[in-house]
Amino acid sequence: MEMGVFQVLASLKGRSICLKELANITNVDPLLLLRTLRVLVASGVVREVGIEIYASGPVGGLLVVPELYNAVSLIFDEHTAVLPSLPAYLASTSFRNPDDTHSGPFQHAFNTPLAFFDWLETRPDRLAVFNSAMAGQRAGRGQDWFQYANVPSLLLNRRRRSAASPCRKGAAVSPSPTESLTRLCEVKEIPNSDMDDREVLVVDVGGGVGHDLLAFHTQFPHLFYPPHNLRLVLQDLEATIASIPTTGVNHAAQTLPPPAQLTNPHPDIAIQVHDFFTTQPILNARAYYFRTIFHDWPDMESRAILGHTARAMNLESKILINEYVLPEMGVGLFPACLDLSMMATKSALERTESQWRDLVEGVEWEEIGSEEHGSEDGRMQRTARLKLENVIRQGGADEDGGALLESLIVVGKILV
Image (cartoon, rainbow, N blue to C red; front, side, top):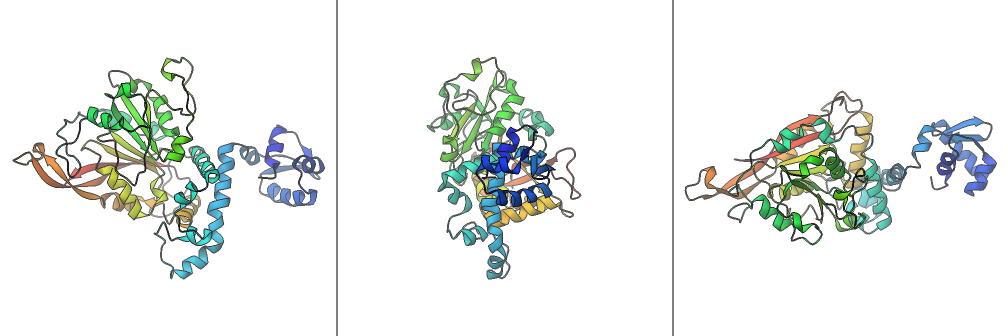
């Protein structure tokens, strides 16, 4: 890829080029280029239209798309780089399943004590590649969750709870949506303080540069005006949030189609620096959304993330998890390889429905309740826990080992 072969072939728009001319343009030794092209031709990436005459193939044309180019870079430079040392690492642990994010196959291969994402933070160039690749992963995974899930049923057709809803341990009552937004706007990264009274519909936790939220906003623009008058919140780490372009354009006043890329500020999407291993600052949102977050973490860290989120929820809040749900048998080749890739780089895993249920329903905590839950003095300590309520699968998702599409895992909160 770094030879520039794909870029040159794609620029020809279907026309062919001889080996000598391609070598001159790319400044690559002709014999080395010839030997490399043989593999690319045999793989169907490049077309061989004559003796030492080549043209771009369908796959080669895709590799000039920045997000896909960076996805391949991520796979080869980080994921695949772990594989040669993986057998020796597993043997050194007597073949125990890796579950330590700071002492796993990745740390062994890269000789670092840092967890994968901490390591990325120290290498801005690789972090940029990762963020670009994650933006590109939305392609090929089927529909967005709000296209196959019933959004009104999940998020809109619910009675509004009072300020007496159950709350986190140590507080008397949960704040109202307005109080939640007041707290939200105390965080300096969130602009548009003139909209403090708008209830939060969805918090995209670890949402990158906002592709999913922007797509949701485009699909349901009416939700951000009366009578609904809701808003969205994007959360991610500082380096990722800093990469979101800033603009002074007021998108609400534009008549052109909405931009394909989120810009900061946005009239309906608050942008906030947040580490999901710390207390969730947005209370009582209708939904806390996670896309492909938990497959990056083993169970202990995943439960910590869920626990911080759970303590911010009221009884009508939902956690929405948009990830693969592996079939209990007959797992296809791609998701099976992806599972091993998560193990190699992050000591993490893809999960079956039963594994998702065990993960989610293992999160419980103590909190202060209110009189509507039966205490005589209006206060009592109750045990709360998360409950997996539903797994909503895309139409066409194959549970028999074929093409696997992402599902939406719906999680609620109950008092026990």
